[in-house]
Image (cartoon, rainbow, N blue to C red):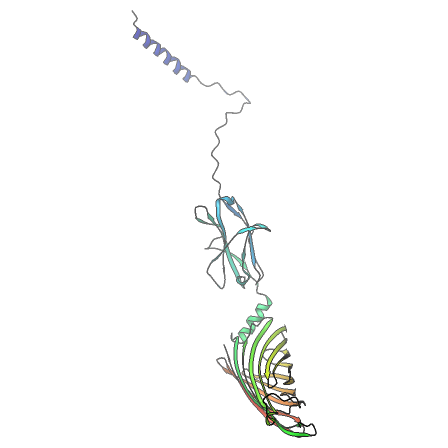
Length: 384
């Protein structure tokens, strides 16, 4: 007799036998010419930002340097940075690369930092996480850009070395000038009278030397006091008859010297002054032919309303490393005279060392062939 449990056990055993038998049968072979079943694709790698950049090899001095780059996957970048340093300043500085009309991204090194002999840079990416990664070169091994020195830089350095790096000069000058006796028209203009023709001058000045196209600029201030054969004119308020021949001048004069050529320089000068008559303007100029800080010929003029004009030539000759000798010829009607006189002068400039210098001058001048007088002066200077 077969019970229900015996029948169930037999049925289960029969099902297990069929199942294992099916699993044990081999798979039918793949028909010829049929591709095998494709495997599941591997997951795509995570996108990473990159920089595409053409390195700069050389760039002109004193011109802003623009560095361009393209950023792949910019949405994954917080900032892209140009990190650079110069040969004269080893500290790294940063400039952000921004969208540019002439290229994908660009950053600019200021012209003041583009100096001989070179500068170097690297490109860095700041990720959204705040992490910094080097995208081109690195701070340890930055890319070098050569900056050739231009001719003006070479000239400036050579002149600065000649001057010992001393570009600023303070000076003080004192001078006494006598023309002896000169004739002046009397008040009633019926004759002439003899007048002492003399003056003294005190002047202080400051000069700075850029040593480029503008070689120098300076400012001078000074005073002149004396007596001169002034022409008859309306009396100055408050001036007595005995003071008619007294002259005076308080002046200021800015001067700029331009380099036209290594051996040719031009000075321009503007004068403003207060005389015994009132406020007046003036101008001046000079052409320097030769070495500006050595042997040279100077041709110049200076003119101030009411006070007069002067035309001069000067030849500086280098005698030794520390001595310059200069003969000077000047034609002038200063101060306030009707007639021009001639001045014949000589000056010796001495380099005293440590930036100190001195110049001594002396000579003779006259407005009349029958009368004349001496002149003497000195200049002290300090360069730093």
